[in-house]
Image (cartoon, rainbow over all chains, first blue to last red; front, side, top):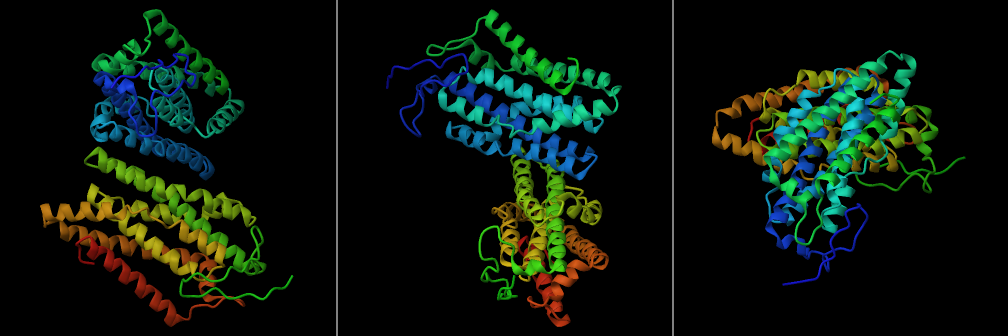
Length: 249
Length: 249
């Protein structure tokens, strides 16, 4: 079976789907390496959402009011509600979802263990910054994937507008007591540092993501300069989010 | 504004709605005592779902496998997803949802503190037995309410078939090691005892629920004998659930 395929655009815009109809497997998946890499990526995102759910539900206990607790718990369930679709897709690609997620349990759990918030504001910032960073990264990677997988990933990144709540609460807190800003800015840097350090470890241990970014016969890849620009974009977006919160990055 | 109203049937079957159209307030709400009682009940159910979510998310950490963790986390989010509708209804009745939930924070938190599971199986049984008991009770009370409120409550009790998972897991564990059955049966009795004790405390402190059950001008009520039968039904259903798990009650 041969088919002429449009490589997906690398700028993140929506390209023509490489599959002819519903349920048909895109040509990209004829490369078993690509299939394995996509399963890996979906496993990482799915477990990432499960662990984010887990920690947000716990951090919600730090909430000073019932309304705050409700808001953070809602953020937790929004994350979790994406898991079902990701798992279904892993299964449709012929892999066992729990096995696909397993390699990412340790790095995500390690990230959360090292960034357990010690108060409500730290929890809020972690929810906002962590979610934003993960979303940026997955969106960058999604640009290199077949259209179906890309759409699924983009859909699982929708945050239902809960960031407004975090921004408002953190700004209020800084307005009430400007002295908290210094410690919270440090906290934001630590979150970014831990995230990069875990991501690096995953990349070193698993070739799949690296091979996705490097491209394939029918998919364009990133050279070192482009990879550098991608990290610059991630860092800039992180800085924008910190500024949005009223914090230096 | 006067309107002839059919009292809702007390057997839990669906009666004719007392409101003429969407958004119109049922006649029963002309009684401010009824309105206050319904707000109280919805506040109790809403906070009950929030606290159940909170504890299920925590108990999911006791899961021996990722698949088990996922199953219990899913039960947690199913509970939480009902909260939005309950809160919207409280607001539509002119009350502040957080204030409506506030009186129930202490009893629910006390119940959960006194019934923190010490292992995965205890967590599973608590999820199954606690959810079932709460659903039975709210369903009994819902029979005394206007049709709109009743429908909302019944809809918020749907468990999406996750009980099958609990039943299967607990039975497997007993089959592997029949000696666990004794301690788990005791655990089931303790859950029932703590639930009744907290419910009694709420009933003693807040007249609203008692007044709902006692009926009103346009609503039939329960006499002491009927109340006794209701508690018998709750106990019998609890026993059925324990038997379903393979445990004596």
